Image 1 (cartoon, rainbow, N blue to C red):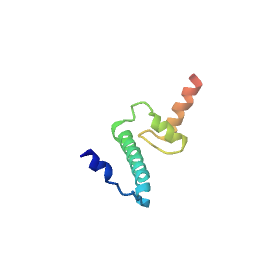
Image 2 (image 1 turned 180 degrees about the vertical axis):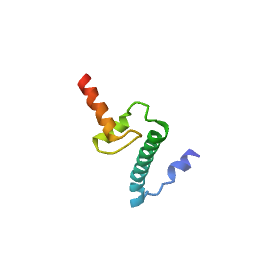
Image 3 (image 1 turned 60 degrees about the vertical axis):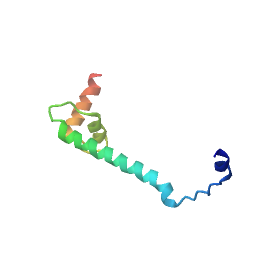
Image 4 (image 1 turned 120 degrees about the vertical axis):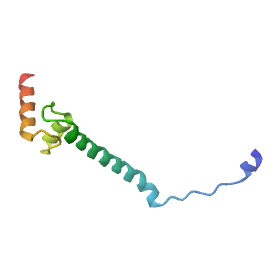
Length: 85
């Protein structure tokens, strides 16, 4: 049985452009899905009474509101934090 398998030659694989692009597309898709789910969790599960999240701090640096807190509140909180440290 093993001798027969050894004698049979496999054909050469030929890859198309889609074979090379598919992992990149899948990675981009899952990255976007992770980003959108993080935004959803920040807006739905975190209240204004909670602390500022790292995601909101990152958004404030890029002038993007990424949670329930306003940008001015986030900037005040980060300014006070650096003054106290």
